[in-house]
Length: 241
Length: 241
Image 1 (tube, chains in turn green, yellow):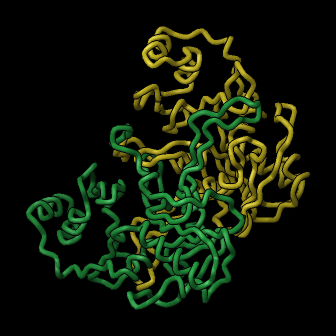
Image 2 (cartoon, chains in turn purple, red):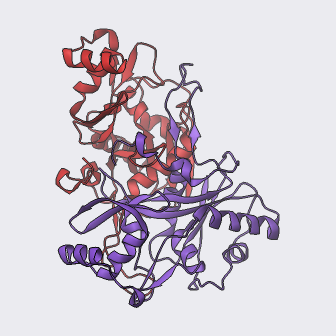
Image 3 (spheres, chains in turn green, brown):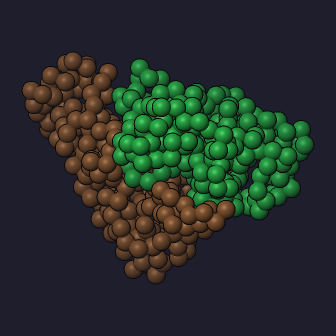
């Protein structure tokens, strides 16, 4: 298995075509998986907020003053959230409208001009599918696409990349009912390969955004269509919400 | 970056030398990272429990009867645990003596003969270091070693591989204070690369244990010595315990 970084020197804008940029950088093979950092998808889709346009609510003002945060950023986080899951030491863990549990609802001031923040794509499955379709049209190559973002995790230090949108692959590899090396039936083993592929790609991406795309080659996967919802644990099954 | 699987056809026993097996299978380069599945380390270290030797406590009997589990397995889980973090629908989420929060304390009946279970290595950092040192002695190659295991996560469906022992690498890549693409200082970005490397390797390992080792090549990392404790979030900073 290989992970090939794609360098993108230009700042992505709504006028850019990400599939074009990919096809001009690297020859794709059938069965490749493209992992793309959320940040450039958000920029291409214009998911950029001018913080000077935001009027903080009283709740945002209250949270900000208590935790010494920027009230406009807090307001933006709240507007991107379904609910607050935990609030502690100035960290807001929320459930986004998509159902992701993460810090700050994906609102991010890094790798963007001062005074602006990016927010997550509205529907990252659709963003992934558009790129998959365009690449098929333009090059005839059947590939899969994952949009990934960097999230923290409970219990463990440090962040890792997770999938927030997919197209053309089953994000879960389920071993239920297959045999182990002693020919006993395996139970309750289902691997979140879309998250593992996202994590693997992060290793070549880094954080300065010079390399927001990676190609994963020579990895076999089920190429049916699925939704990122397959990776979101339903609330009634979740022991930690 | 490349991920190269190492196939191991034989069943690992305490008499086997894992570094020997690796060196006979694949030529290593300086700077390679070996990721090794916990299961073969446990087998090599004799961390195998004959379930017929276990006498369940009253607590284990109680939990087992409530959740219809095997009382001997529950007793083994409890003996590997510092405390129970959550108990729900027959799933025991515990804190192991090492400090890992995971289901069933790493007690595992898969890929082992019926009537036995494997438990986690006593000290996976030491297990990793032994293999790192032996490979340096035998081949002159400077490598890093990660021992990995498959854990579930809150909020997300499916399991991913995590590091449980490391030797010869810093498990966290800290971007604090570096510049983003707009020359602004990056804050609070620290990537748990040891977990990402474990996840990446799982993609070539699969679950039948025919391929319990992977080599990660062409990935740059800080080769200082660290402990897996760097990846365990201290309880007072953890919002979800």
